[in-house]
Length: 95
Image (tube, rainbow, N blue to C red; front, side, top):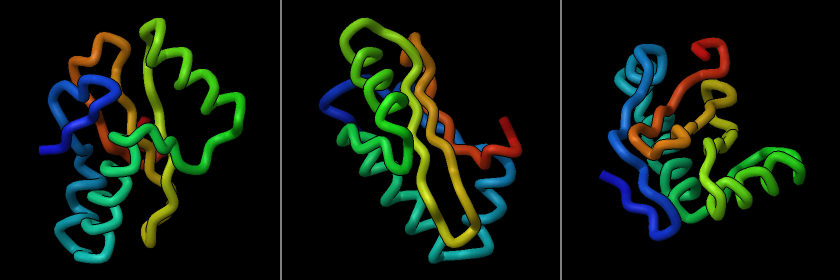
């Protein structure tokens, strides 16, 4: 569904918690879509500078990518696995 010019997303999935929240809140669903767009552009959201630098290194050398975004339902994470096989949207409590 989304395309990144910087890295492969692999299969895009959401956890049951994210899915349920998206089903019950159009606002949240739109926020998730916006967060995915930011993530695809290399905007890692609300992370420390150190964590953002780690993502930049992972883009060059391989490694897991992660973004943190604030939504009406609380913080969400977007994680692309190091092998770029899957990108998951989840609540931190679902990790």
